[in-house]
Length: 135
Image (cartoon, rainbow, N blue to C red; front, top):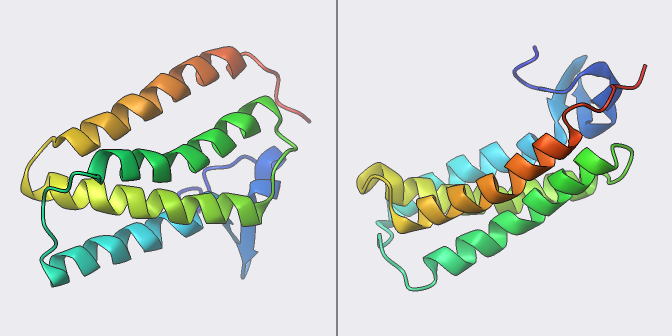
């Protein structure tokens, strides 16, 4: 069931255990909220353009990105409550950007979100890639 938890055994502190199945703490907050946000926007016929879309989506993305980056440098740091909470915020952000994207491909809000994630993730991954895994 690796798809429910993309974490290796040395990172099981980043997961919840449900009936013998590990589930990523951040993903548990992200995906259900993302789906619910998209369904709600479709049901309410939410507008596709909002002047605050980019700053709000980026603001909702930053906590998960910052917590993830900190966790790469300090693997024992953080808690699952924080990971799930930042995942909920990320789910709201992704729900909005994907809702717009599904109707108007590659909107500014999605491109800005992708640029932010790339700008943080690439240097963090490069800086931490060669670290030996515990165990």
